[in-house]
Image 1: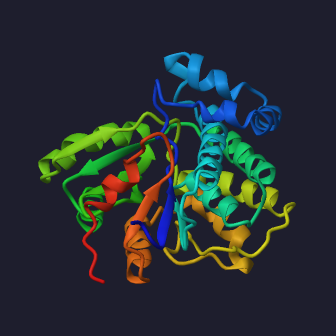
Image 2: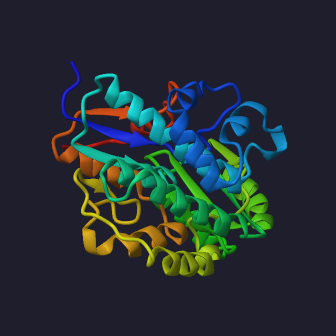
Length: 286
């Protein structure tokens, strides 16, 4: 029996063709609100969206935030065990904060919608996942090759780190990493160099936007991507903005949760195991 779980929310990249989105119809009133705020049909995005638009940041983030939130509501109403910790990867952090009562569903969606707009305006950047090397090894490869404008974006596990930077240099770095014993190098289908200094201006604009919202203290601890420690009420706006142009410290976040007595992790979504698979490759000394 699962006890004292941590609930995890996936971020951009969790969307896939053919995923079960029936929960959207279960909570049709919330879906209608979400579509009014977002300005497009979230249901059609998942069901009828052309393949070339299925990774567009502008649409993915509001759609996935909505789906995550409704899946979580369905989980609780179906008798799911309430969590004692919450965490979300990148976009998923907004779902974690909403689940913790920091803001309501609508406010969270307005924040995500603005975030998506700002991030989608970022041009010329890209990201790649490096497998088989830890974060220190990835950083060493970047440093000894003149940086190339690249930086660590997602510190996911002991064997996976995502890098961000100018798209031309992301392509250039592929052969360099293979020459330095990377097992795999996957260029991600995203529109910008997220979680890197290339989003500094976007993060500043988002911080200004966030100032117009009121936040409540988290009712459940939420582990912040940028610090790998629980959010405090006083740092909410700053952390939300800094998340856009700073690394996601996912590996450290998982270690923090485990070291505070949590043995079980549940990932919200349609048979989703993206984050759970990462956890399998995180060595944790509790």
